[in-house]
Amino acid sequence: MTSNIENLTKQKLGLALTFDLAIREYVAETIRPLMFRLVSEKKFIPETMSTSYVARHIFEKVRKKFPDYIIKFASGNPRNPVNQAGPEEFKMIKYFNDNPLYNDWTGEIVIDNRNYIATFSAMRMEKSCLRCHGNPADAPYEMIKRYGPDASFYHSLGEVVGLDTVAIPSDTVKKLILSEKFKNFGFLGTVILLLSASLIFVFKFVITDRLSNISKHLSDVEKQSDDLKIGSIEIAGSDEIAGLANNFNKLAQRLNNTYAELRMEVEERKQAQNALRESEEKYRKLFELESDALALTDSETGDMLDVNISFIELYGHTKEEILSKKNTDFSAEPDQTKKNIQSRKKYIPLIHHKKKNGKVFPVEITANYFEHKGRNVLISSVRDITDRKLIEQQLEASLKEKELLLSEIHHRVKNNFEIISSLLDLSSMQTENQEVRNLLLNSRNRVYSMAMIHSQLYQSDQFGRVDMRKHISELAEHLLFVYGSKKKVNLELETSEVYLSVNQAIPCALLINELITNSLKHAFRDSVQGKIQISIHDSNDNTVLLRVKDDGDSISEGMDLKDADGLGLKMVKHLVAGQLKGEIRFNHDDGTDICITFK
Image (cartoon, rainbow, N blue to C red):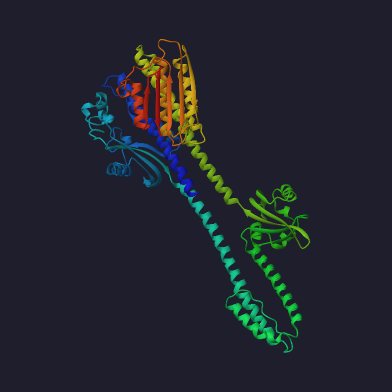
């Protein structure tokens, strides 16, 4: 249970950090380059060009709902003082700089004298960052004017310039873990107690009782008359005690001829009585030492016949009071108790009983029905499950809190996707340049594709997997509505069940968006009808095969995708090689046929 709680907490941290990094990546790779094309190179608009600005404002809204949680970006020399790294974050920046192969760290850490479970992700200097974080002479004029020529400049490639941090207070998690440990210690103590009692019983049965029988027999021989037969000692086994008894029996055998039959009968009776007494003692000890409350009841009349000490302690009555009552007198649901007995239920997972002081509490009952001394009886084992129910309620409350956090993040991310789409639509309406409009429309469709992944991920029962068959169907219909409404283009989908992780699903979705958009916009320029075939399959070796084929105008024969200079094809190359680590094959026979494989 402890491991499950810790793993669940780390999964939630990873999910929040993934959303943060996805927002940053999209701003850096899509929105910022697009804004540089739309405005002068001297311009700098942090609301759309700064990844830390956008991410910080999104997660500040989340932190209003969860003020104890830390979701922030920190830097050693930030442009905004809000992003100034603290002592712990400086240590993490140094750790990542000293270990260039590591970019993530998750564990327990103390921040501002409080324990947290945190995840840190290093932001390293890349070539695309040099303009804004390298030499200030290369930076946009308005950036220098706004922040000055010193803050967050002069960084080298590979250097850690900042951290993305997500941290959850460990107080609640540790309380749950401590509660689980106490429960396990209690169970272990009970097991040890029962084992000790069993060992004591075995020692008594194997050694003490056998020696006691020998001693008693010798004492009887000493006191009896000489003319009486000396009975043999019945001791099983091959140990020293059994050897002693056998030697004595050999010595006394020649004296046992006269009264053999009589002595044998007497000995058998003694053995039967001993066995009966031992059986009764065994039952009584087990009955009394059992940690659960045990009750012996007449199953027909409900009369209480016997109870153990645990039953007396649990309900607060004296034994005399208990034996004067019926079993329904201890139940807060007497009618249900009668039905359970009439139906001879052997296990009742939950029913409420009441103590002498009137307190009602939940119990779990295991029952066994049998005949005893001519009466139909049942023995019931009653266990107080108040602590278990309390822990279940605490776990359920904790889970609801995590679900609320996830719902809030989903709501914020969804709203920001919608805001970005609206801004792109507004920008498109404010320009007469068709090329710019096309770029904005393409960007809007890419945002839509990522929003679909995010929505499907939130609605799924499994946060780590995305159903690509469902996603392709919905995305293809959307793009056909946007680009192919005036053309009779048929979509043929041949997809099997393929589930991808979030890290693969987002680039794969963008890739499919680009390929379908390219076919709808360019393959059917001279015709008003055509066909686009889309297929995706998963082989036995976990290789995914994605294929998009149309029967329209083909890309020029001999064209190498490595030489393509269009934004869409550049993105396709980057997504396949850079993020999916896959391969792409191109065929221009009878239209355009593009096959992509990745694992």
